[in-house]
Amino acid sequence: MRGSDPAAVAALKAGGLVILPTETVYGLAADAGNPRAVAAIFEAKGRPRFNPLIAHVADAVEAGRIAVFDDRARALAAAFWPGPLTIVAPVRDRERVCDLARAGLDSVAVRVPGHDRARAVIAAFGGPVVAPSANRSGRPSPTTYADAVEETGFATAEAVDGGDCIVGVESTVVSMLDGRVTLLRPGAVTRAEIEALIGPIDTGGDGHRSPGRLALHYAPDAPVRIEAMQARDGEILLGFGPGSGEARWSLSPSGDLREAAANLFRRLREADRERPTGIAVAPVPDQGLGEAINDRLRRAAGFVG
Ligand code: AMP
Ligand code: MG
Image (cartoon, rainbow, N blue to C red; front, side, top):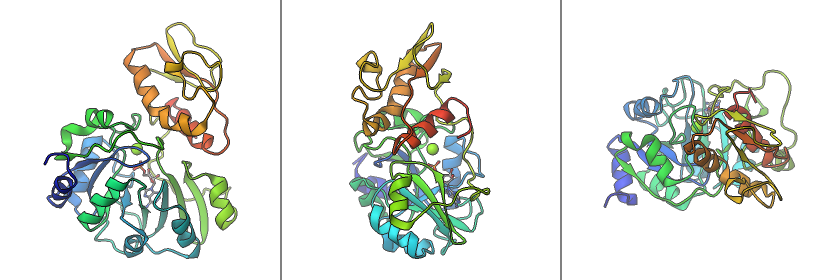
């Protein structure tokens, strides 16, 4: 049946692309070990080939087959998987996650998604599945089934409707190479949660190479202006917190960061559909999940994070 888990598994085995729901954002999935399928993802998204993909697996045992985890990586996996945390570690199996998926690196990014249907499809498929966000490169990630199909449905053999994404921003990416721990991308697993478990995240220096973290990213068509106190002529203002204007355009009327993250890309897309001269976004506090929200907003506005 179209859209069923078995149909999605069959499509993956045949080298096709599948729209797959996860708790973070909708993914465009393919067999990580099939270079032609992986190439089709880069093609459909218009994604530069130097930007490596995350391998999604069903559990930590599967993760251990493709990546080499040290004690700290194991501790993070035990605490946060299934969930919105990606761990970058030395690659163990270069076949099951092909060169193109890793952008030729000796490291691999791996995660166990916290969405039951995603895990069920991946488990039934029986190997790692790469699944970058299902948007065309540079655009806001889709957090609803309809938005995912609108973005890259044209390139897929199958699409699974798993409802609206609960988290709404992409996974936290932590690099654990050469004994150093670096935060490559903030997400719903916060800096404080990671540090509480394994100690301080390394800062300073160059950190690890984080290919693909482009300055202008997650961007709607309309220009985005951040830290805005009010809308200018023709702009839509996305508010945050009590008294933040029209409820329809608020990221969270109560000022809740989880709600704001879940609404972020959806509101940017909805605002864009009104063809405003610009989208202004009210200040969002930088604590906890706010670090991820502000990271995406700075990139949507064209500033390096
Ligand atoms: P996404 O854009 O959600 O598919 O996330 C992929 C991001 O994870 C990339 O843009 C990189 O920043 C990071 N990433 C993936 N694989 C690696 C890797 N092997 N080494 C370093 N960063 C990686
Ligand atoms: Mg993406």
